[in-house]
Length: 346
Image (cartoon, rainbow, N blue to C red):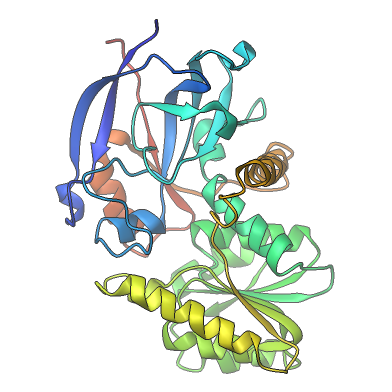
């Protein structure tokens, strides 16, 4: 029976990035329905930034291994699993557990990565790609010729939102810091400095009749301005609360944000508001997995075909997760910080 020694990054409690711990442990063999994955890459997302503070709205109990998603090669499968998976590179949405050199996962959650796509490149599209695709196509239902606003257009989700919206035929206005203006413009968006005191007036000048969608990960007081940017029939999609990331009451702030969006939906002005959660619908496991598989397959194919470009801010060794977190939280990067694993025997 196959077992392996895994290196894992452990979050012991609310700590600064330097507080992450490393451990080695034996895992495997895979149980029926499971696959053993040699993890090649995992990502640093906004969720882990909140989790290390204990402010994530669905906070896992400490201690745990972070890692919202991962990409790797299947090395063994349990009973009832297609043996052709062995040797295949796959991607998985995990919520926790991805920051490891090996992981046991439910084989039903694995999505094959197209040939020719590297692990770090594929990793940038797992949780970020599912989030961007779901918000754009399932929630906002963007059509060609429409105009959308992407806040944080230089981020991991933002860079994919811009590219997917442009591929869908939409015009994109993207907010970012001045240092990222050219990078956002190269993606196909019209950049606007988010630090400008008249930010929303500048956006209105670019779209005087309103926009069909605003994608807002910031929350806080600025969510009101995002709502006011919408044209009749437009949709505000909130998917985070970065403005309260450091607040111990962030979970409560997120719930208040969701409540506000629900109230706005009751207004008779022809606009909609929604809070996007990539895990919505997971209680209906079969349909949830089917949608996740379909949409992740679609974005990975777009990457393989050259329609999407993977925006990797940095590749950082798994054993330097503390440095990776500091970089991800610095606000200086374009794209996603990816943890990569160097596998050695033993």
